[in-house]
Length: 371
Image 1: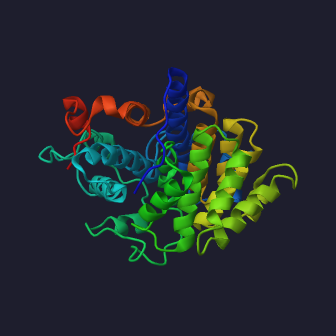
Image 2: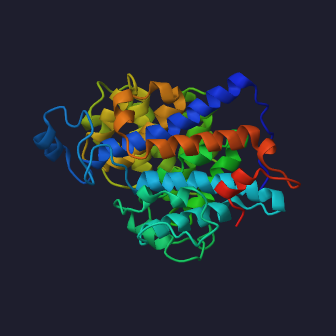
């Protein structure tokens, strides 16, 4: 898998990229945490519990405010897998889906082990983070997809009928591969989605999300990124449900004051293309990140999924400094998210200074083993 033309990184470009990487990962986690406390509730139940405006701040979930769920956990391990793919490339092996799959198997271990297994030298630093060893409402399809070592592929996907948003919500990191061509980003996200989700709409929704993030991380407007994503999708068999969902999101922008009615008209199920459409719509009409995320979680659909996807889009668009500081202050795992985001940005912009076929920085190899 060729990656296209490598970027040339000056200081300003590196700083902008790091801000967008941080923004995408932190924004997705904030949206996840904001929606976690109302996950599974319909709008009437949300309003009954939190007032007519619904959720306007974190509410307790999993024993605390600002708790993240399996959506953020899986996203972190996706980033870990992408970094390792770059490191392992020095050995002559280059198959990013395999490295991402291995990373998700490490996530699966956090769902049944009591804590990090110090005997496993290939775990690296992320799998040693004890706070990740908590089951936070993981999708059944993800648990099943990574329940054994067999990797799902496009020809033989895991969970062939799975159409939910479990693959979509972990796919923002693929879009941060800004040195890749958009078509390759789409392909990688789709291939990795097949590791747990077999329905074409679920796979292409994950790919579309990655391409949207890719455009935003490269400095495109959100509307422009949507248009470019639609053009890429048109080339793929089975794209119609995802294309139609995105077109409806664009059309809804001009239909009146944003609110739950317009959001739920785009879909209130956990189908991946509906989650993507709701998140894109909320990002398009948002006055700022706080406004967009409040829209994204106050409806009868899967609030944490729509919040997470919307947060990643807005974070990639505006960068980390646009995220609400009070929400960041209470966000579970913020230090880990920042550390991983900075490692990813450093790998993408300064990878040759960290490792090559001839030499590797020992500290980097300890963090991201080649195994």
